[in-house]
Amino acid sequence: MIDNYDSFTYNLVQYFGELGAEVQVYRNDQITLDELDALQPERIVISPGPCTPNEAGISLAAIEYFAGKVPLLGVCLGHQSIGQAFGGRIVHAKQIMHGKTSMIHHKNEGVFKGLDNPVEATRYHSLVIEKESLPDCLEITAWTETPEGEFDEIMGVRH
Image (cartoon, rainbow, N blue to C red; front, side, top):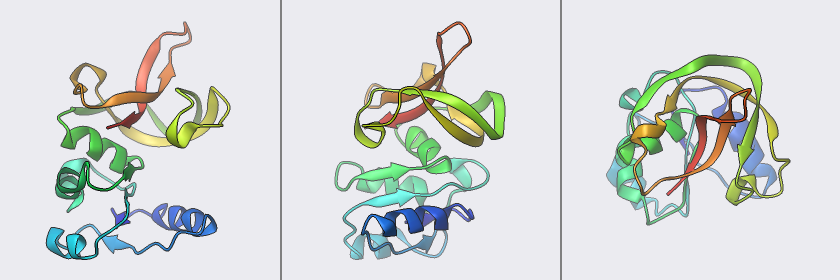
């Protein structure tokens, strides 16, 4: 796991451990791409964190290098970093969501398979991947809707 200096990183580590995964955690500025590659990771998680993908240390370079080679999962800043690494623009959310819940609609695939649809989730972010700039290689897998039932903002993507 690439740790973008966020306390939630260790919640994720614990959850993955409960699923039987052995997780190694590296701060985003304390490992090089060569060192990460030498570990031969089976999968990589890019954690939440402050700021934007531009300040997320090795995160963007790791996504660009490992995309298509190993599964990548981005949470919050990690999700935004995946969007930016493939050419999407990261913009301010229409509504800042810090500790508030929303109904998240999804395709019932991948990490969302088997969840209620929509699923109520707690959000804590100020930035989103702009839909209009989303590259064709990324598919929207989760989103919020307006009160009128129209697409609002991206909450999940898959490469």
